[in-house]
Amino acid sequence: MTRHLRSLLDLTPAETNRVVDLAVEVKANPGAYTEALRGKSVAMIFAKQSTRTRISFEVGLHQLGAQPLSLSTSGGTGMQMGRGETVSDTAQVLSRFVHAIVIRTFGQDQVDGLAEHGSIPVVNALTDLYHPCQALADLLTIREHLGSTRGKKLVYVGAGNNVAHSLMLAGPRSGMDVVVTCPESLRPNADVLARAQADGAEHGTSVSVVIDPTEAVRDADVIYTDTWVSMGEEEEAKRLIQTLSGYTVTEQLMAATGKQSTIFMHCLPAHRGEEVAAEVMDGPRSVVFDEAENRLHAQKALMLLLMGGASWS
Ligand code: CP
Ligand code: NVA
Image (tube, rainbow, N blue to C red; front, side, top):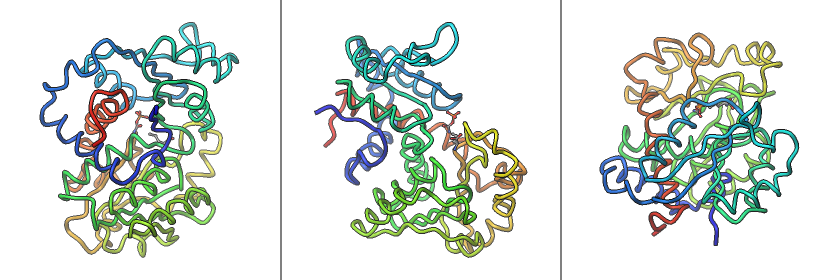
């Protein structure tokens, strides 16, 4: 059966753990995997900008012996998808040429459609709804800095967006409690929250929304934030920045955890003075550049598993 990463809903807790275990191994021993995907090609479609995701996939696939094809949806080198070729036709054609598709786009339906109509693995490299590759790398980073994700409390501060949604699903898959603290008008998607809470109930973790940030961060092991204005929301920037003005991660908010060991995480790109104070972003508790680096290792592990270069068990 063809496996995908449309969202973290595609992974069980054991499989999530397997990706992170393999990422640890790949990071420690990259030389062992240089031929693992030799002769394979991956179409990487980017309808939105990217620094970390595109580069880490491109470099990571190269390091595994595969050929990454960086494709856009606009301009002279853009895919016909950008001017109306259907997702179904695109999926069927790409399935004849390449061995996997990585896509960053707006609608989750495009990711789901490629998976439905193609016959090769499809990886969500960010949609408006989810950012699962980010969350997998984040689990690796938390494990490295705190020893384990199990029993830890992650508090996401900011809008209930794609990154928040993927962290909400990552919690129950990694033994971690997740709290989203956000203004009432920017709560996470209700369906994603309900699913994350159901998964949490099944696996013994909690997923909750707390409006007051100071209350939310109490006992947090990880404080996490993301940009206040996501790609595609540029026209709403003013309103979003106003609405989120009480949700900056400051030294004071870090201190409100009551723990010296709390780490600060951010998927990047960051906006100092908006979602995070410069002293926190550039301070001793920030692990943001380890977090960025881990995109490479986690995605190498993911592609090995999805493309037959390593086994799931
Ligand atoms: N965190 C992340 O996905 O970064 P990019 O948008 O640069 O890929
Ligand atoms: N929420 C952000 C994440 C960027 C990596 C966005 O969608 O733009």
